[in-house]
Length: 184
Image (cartoon, rainbow, N blue to C red):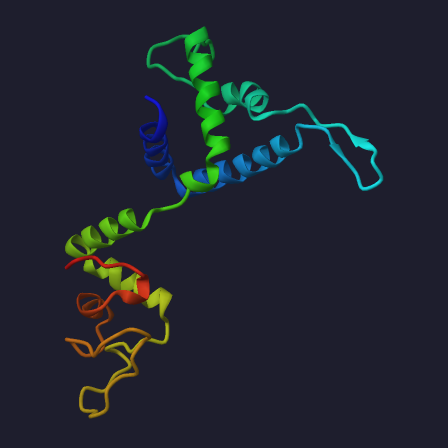
């Protein structure tokens, strides 16, 4: 697998990592990319050569790859033993991770839209919770007196609620505040 298909697959695998592991990996990849930026020699303002560290992305992947990405087969006595093809694949994967770490950890608008659509259909309470966290000052049924005549204050880009005080019902009307068009 090569090119965009490989990067898409890597991104989906990264999304499967537990959040703390994904965050740790992202920080490590950022650091390795920074080290690789200083691989070549450069010159200071006075014309003196500043030697590079010689740690290119390829060299970093060769050193760190087998330690970060370990292959494990059930029933294998020595899971640490890798053959040449496995080592080459691991090095190539880590190279791609270092080179594309900025884009691999970003969730595309299309994927956000798909996740929101599925969540809204299957778990509207989760959407309600997320919106309450994002907009803590939004009107809530507990704070709202049903006998009041005035409308609750609207959030930016929101229309009046179908069900008074329900944040998730606003998602049906207008989700422009999320910069998404979920097509519901």
